[in-house]
Image (cartoon, rainbow, N blue to C red):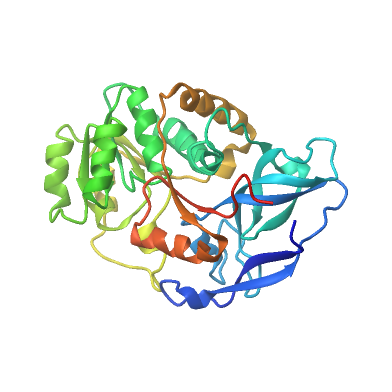
Length: 340
């Protein structure tokens, strides 16, 4: 094992869309685990849109990073050294770690990774936070019923792709918005969506929805915001439910965008709009993990990871989220199984 540990720091706060100047690769010594901790060699790390909010000097549901802080997120890694009876060297675990080659994690804050269920990277996607967000966001907030029409924005991403498949399991018609023909083909051909709309080549979202969702929209799972959401709001049915999970269309805005006010459209249909934070369901994570794991192992729930190779390319992987580079979950492979 090397004695040098590379880790990414927040070099400066972005003004608008982040760029490479916001990141600094720093070298330090490999840390030693304290009692109750594990030293973990990172196999995969997660990059997620919510991290953009942590780069701001403002209150949010996720604590902001200070300039000079190590960047953090979900990781899957191999235990190299253990100061806990719960795990031993060679075990695979997932938890919250640094964008680094090595990290120390509290053994109480990690979960085991079973590679016989799915590839380890899937524990950052369908079997991790995004999968649980899809599970609870759709079933508890969206409350889909058989025969409902469910529309998902950002449908080819880590959360949206799982939302659509769970909606199909619940007997719904599912329509997804995504940003390329490759993505829309994946949604309909592989994941079973009934229709998919390429928002980059569609001039009239309302007309596209008239065709894809002729009976209107009963559940809208919103990962994006912006003009797509404006169009969906005009198609909401009586007692529709809207789960607001993300607003990636606005994450790099320096001001609050304004435009036609959409709330009057909510009144006649008595739609319910609810924000979604996965932390609210923390006491039930075991339930979601068990069901998602069973569906993945059986092949009923499909998943895909876009893998960027090398810790040195982690900023590129993060910035690629805002360009729509990923299909499914965007992850960074930091080390391989056979590396020392």
